[in-house]
Length: 352
Image 1 (cartoon, rainbow, N blue to C red):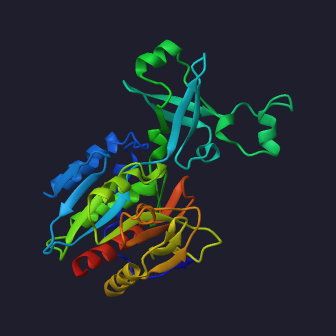
Image 2 (image 1 turned 30 degrees about the vertical axis):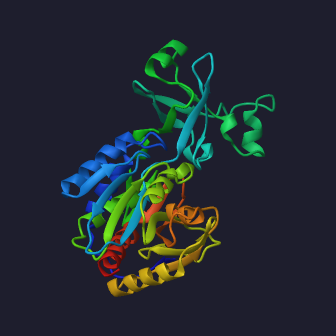
Image 3 (image 1 turned 180 degrees about the vertical axis):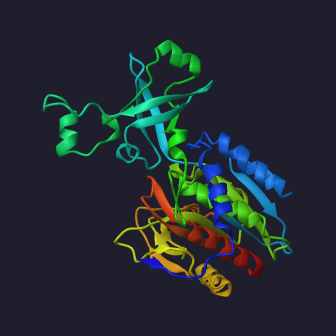
């Protein structure tokens, strides 16, 4: 079942291309340099004042006509794996980085981000043609696959890995060729739409705003998947009237959310309630823009805004999101919902 509505003004092909460019930039939490370069270049191409702070956030400021300020964040880091140890035969023992699960990725190519060079390995779970004498047998019939059961084959010696800068703490992500987005009619399917699609919203929004009533900070936030570290640093050092986080919103039977072009505005998540008055302002902006909006309360979720509110860094927070299937996996979202987030926020920023 899908929500209906008119097609947004944003061109789906251009939006797909923008998201694709960002998805193909690796950015595991704390190792986000590759995507940083792309984001900075695109903000600067719009002649917007842009910088990177000590926490790794990429910030673009659009000056307003008063001393008030709001921020819109979209985290640029992605989930993945982190090397815990290296076996004598060169196999990597990996653990989750953010909310990743081995069964979501499946066996296949992963990219290992060594200090000196990026190399490929194979995320492996072991052979299936086995008896009860092998641990893989229980995974076939009665136990879930966990990171302790998986490893990454490198076929490299310890000396070779050391020369490449592969060590405990090295980040590992899904292989770049496996991250290539797929177009399914007006939907985009890809790993790491969480939250590269939201960064694409920020970049598109930057091109639409000129002389807003208040200062607008567009923040591609760092290390969100491991605790919203970048957003907490930014909000600790910048006084804001409001913070709006851009996010994916999980599609699941327990939530009254439909797939399609209608974005979702959250009222509550695991970290607490969002500001009802700010949400009312966003609902008004959506109405002015003629865009349908869904409302939800969800679990197992947090955003830059809810976490910053919980720690007292901002008094008003909201989370605008787009419905997404297979969150933290091979995600699927309607390009119209992503485009409509742009239009809602453009309307909001010019009337706040």
